[in-house]
Length: 311
Ligand code: CP
Ligand code: NVA
Image (tube, rainbow, N blue to C red; front, side, top):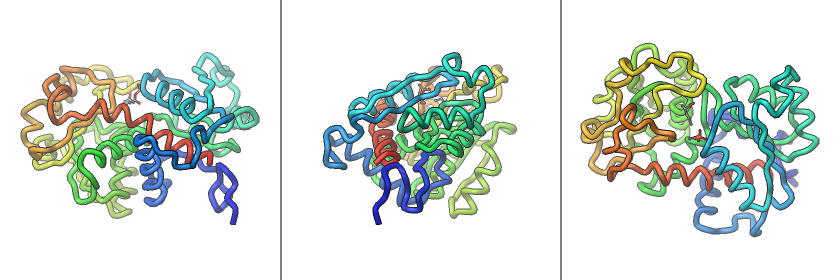
């Protein structure tokens, strides 16, 4: 059977929306593509497999890594991008997401969106006839967690049976990590302040799909013996409640917390980091930290995502 580019064998458009929509085999394929691009391989046999292809990127929130890594990745693969901010499109003036999806599909080969509203991502995917990629919503950040998994694997091998400790706000990045636990067989321990727990539906999906997920309020218990310690900003983009220091300071990843993890534990942060808040300089710049590899791997794994979506 011939597979039409950008469509699955079942004929559906290959969107990259969230990790709970995938089978593990497909995520493995994308991670392997990312690692191949990093090595300098040509997994599709060509230098420029996306030659002539265009990606539209809609940013309703700021970005450094996502913006630059997608653009660099598309260009390295022979394609190009069009960047649209909130004020550039008619979305801000009330044109529906469905109509926007229909129109963009006539001009470009794929659309990436960073938005506050997960319903916009889903609406775009429902009405676009080209692949849609989730570049972060208030709920999830799957491209980031794919890069994180790639980074863990390149430093330490498989995540299977490992302990991943999250300390801080149970936010969008945390949610994608919880979803990943159902695919990659690691134990996910989340320590967060009461009231900042990850979404119960995300936890229920992951545990219902075989993941070991524990949600608690003690960062030391979460980090004890962990193979990987992760944190993120206290205040995510669009978060109304900015005064969270009192609640989140006890979850700061500092030298004392890292000392409870395994001696060879890794530290990750999706960035941007707020040094002295959720993480200290000592940890960011210390021997456990792989944050710069993590940022670099956004480029490689997203090349895997883009070619999986489009080829
Ligand atoms: N980690 C991440 O997505 O960074 P940006 O907000 O800079 O894209
Ligand atoms: N949780 C952060 C991630 C930034 C990449 C936010 O949503 O702002």
